[in-house]
Length: 299
Image (cartoon, rainbow, N blue to C red):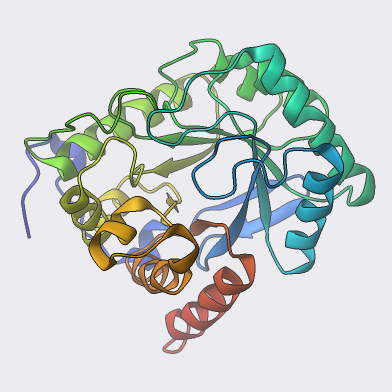
């Protein structure tokens, strides 16, 4: 196991996973007890996302699919109005709001207690989303793109997902490089989660950013060493679903990667991940249920 060159705070980073993920968050009147894993269903309201771009681009299709994922057992619906695939171009705040907000409102009109996450780096989008009932902001920039976003999350007592990414979606897969990917991701997530706490945010998730400015070997190293990140004592979100490193490793097309995604999700949960972000909710729910039985078998 590689060592981390970090400060005293990380000296005891490897502890029993159960002790480090004993937090619980109340989000939109739902208590999340992170002694067990949960499922975040992906809903892309975009024309160009890597897996399902354009599939749910209209409001009615998107709302119906979000409701279907809730029926299938998703604990959180993560709605994104701007593609974050490698090479993706940015969209304006206005366009992102026009895509996302009607879907948030449509789902909550029919399922008022649904926990909705919005995948955005823009404060203006976050403000609109939280004002109409979203409960989580999933920021792939880890609070680096828009300095006002943290204040908005605090204002609404919302939760934040702080993710690591090298570069931007347009540039992130152009020769990414790390001296020590585990250490560098750890230090970034530690620094940014401290910033969030200092802003008064109490419900913080961290995400190593699988596939976001990472080489194939970087992704596998991060999954295999998630127990380092657990040492930060925040619930870990992991997004492995249908990622390109799976396709590269197994020579699989996007629509052939669900079984492999489930296998890696199981490993990630066993290493301490507590939210799995997935396109296939049924598979995710099954994986979480099986792993939860294993995690509690000796209790």
